[in-house]
Image (tube, rainbow, N blue to C red):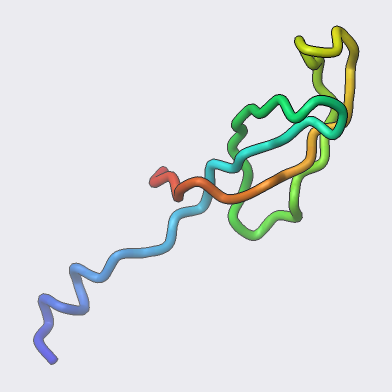
Length: 66
């Protein structure tokens, strides 16, 4: 193994972009969370239902380099 392989090794990102889905209507939105954090479950305003509802994490979209 050459020294350049060790120096150019990529590190894992600290944050990920995740997709959140409304439990009431299926409306989707994205948010950033830490990679090692728990799955998100937050309340936001849902434009389809016109109320504040629970959004749960559906899937990870991509890693963010910061």
